[in-house]
Image (cartoon, rainbow, N blue to C red; front, side):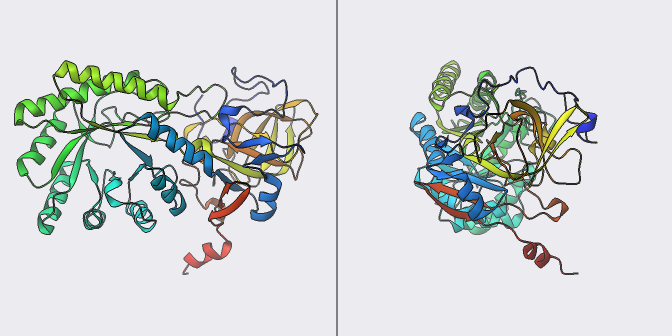
Length: 461
């Protein structure tokens, strides 16, 4: 059921939860696919990450806090790099970006896609090689395109005829020939939430394939001769588990590539298949490994290229949340526990929709566990909610926590590395949490906690 804009009281009510959620045999047990690879429950019952007790993190950095397992992020980056040799793997800057993460993914040999001037500035300030950056966006400004050209960004993904004209004029003025891709909307409906499905025709991104705009855009760029058209780009959505959509997408975009070859005598050397691969937020999610994805996608591309008599182009993929999403959990402190007339138990934590808007925005599901101790109490079906003045301020819709959960307990929510800190807000004037990276039993602050002084510094009234 979709989340109701008026809040949780207008949605599902009851104490049984969704059909897939079952009472655990051990309420302290961790489901491995939900957590960073170095998270475990220590001898004292508290969670540890890379050997560091979360109680120490809470004492040192406060709560709420995003906790990043650095080796986990790096290993997931390497998993994609190794599964896709000779393929450009682009880390999704919009999922989560800061200078420390830019350096991590650069050191692991990945590329980076950005979609705003701020993301580009962060990437460049952290030393990301400009030639390994792809610049997305449906409304890039003149200033943003100018910065991209001056920096030598490797690929600019064209999204409209206005942008073609804009970039062509800027490139001509500077006497440069930037590499570009045409973003094609291929009419494939990804099996995901409507707000993150991006390849159906009625949406803001790209050039329509069915209406002929994609071919016209390619012909325009080729005929002008100012921009270096390297290939086509297709992205069908996010949080995708089924590769069948990629098969249809590849068939259609490679058919366009063959059309361009036949009409202009140009066989484009590159193809970006997008990605948006899914991760496990709950036990109902079953994501594929990078090796499995690589095998299926290569088979699809090889088959479709053979059908069109095309040479297999140099490939790029964009795994999206699959690299950083599972590498982070959010650590909260419980403030109140409230039973509402036997209908539901609400466990209120010291964060909420300001640090994770996805539950309210996408009706997203998350898991949670008691983090600061183990418990021998029976499982209790609870709803983890935030502190904001909003009945829809829900962090975890349904989860089994120990029945003795109480104020002062620490609760951890896994899978919060993607689109949580990057979409965080100051709703109710709540400062945004810090990001703490942990490696080899040591923690370091990579994004500091905002303060009330930060908020007031922007208020010039």
